[in-house]
Image (cartoon, rainbow, N blue to C red; front, side):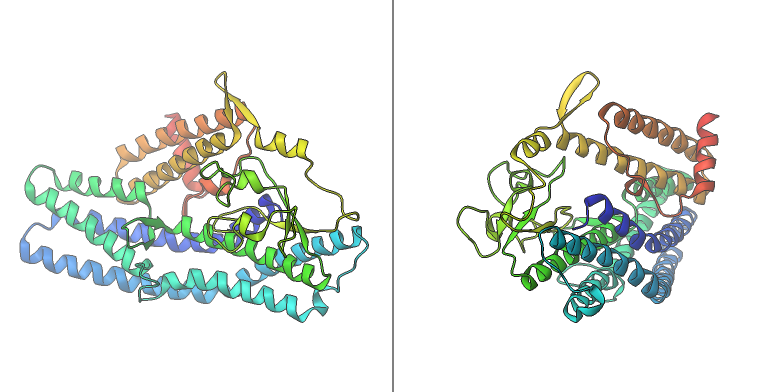
Length: 402
């Protein structure tokens, strides 16, 4: 069983190569939007719009094809290392209870589970790069084309209305692009997920689910029916009831996979349900447990302390789960301000670049103060933005000091 921090670490390594793709697309869209304000004649505009969308699509397909070809070996190595560690933990748990598992290299079935999990995880990402819709959703090609068309039309309409200068019309569109980021998928409802969100969710979920499947397979081999769920502070509470959506209710408990009386069942925890145990973005996993041979990791007292945990912020006590939600909101704000800085720099907006640097510095200080007061852990991965490296960070910091 991998801990949430270990899963996040491996997911970050797998997500990193996609950052470059997101950065290139963002910069390409900025350059095309900047030119929009200077094209006012109707015929000229229609020609430019068609050319911009066509060139953007061709560029996007070229970049996605290149990254897909480069990803294989690096992604496979990270995924394999994660599963090797997960399997090793199972071996240790079994040995502590007087059982033994064959080495991973000797288990063809376990290796097949790992390969299947890796293919499933990567297919989720590769599907974004296809030119067809996937399960009724608009994929990355369609989503970014729709984004670019929207921002081009916005900037052009502002310019020809006379209400805005060509610079201001482009700036309005660029500000909105910076706030939302590069889209990766659009759902039938119209909701759009950005590329960084989709990639991290896919890699985190894929690693965690495959590690859980490995443990389930090992439990089958050792005829182990009972599984102990892990627990962590800040687990989602769902609707607050005793059901699969309330992870804080079932975490740390013992589950009987056969449905034995006196234990939680797989239905109770939502095994196989996207909202439940090991569902999308769920950080929980499980380990094998034998009555009389295994030692409980989570006593009732420890679970009560985990679920009731609070933190102090500005003199007030707030629930740990609520605190993690506040932290994530602040991290999203930092990512948006980093994108704003990159967009302003790429488009040559010196005043906006300076303002974005100041906002970014203030948001970073706010998050730092929040973490110091609450004692929560910083996750730089959730604050990161493609293309915002050391040079950009130094530039933003220097402008903020000015």
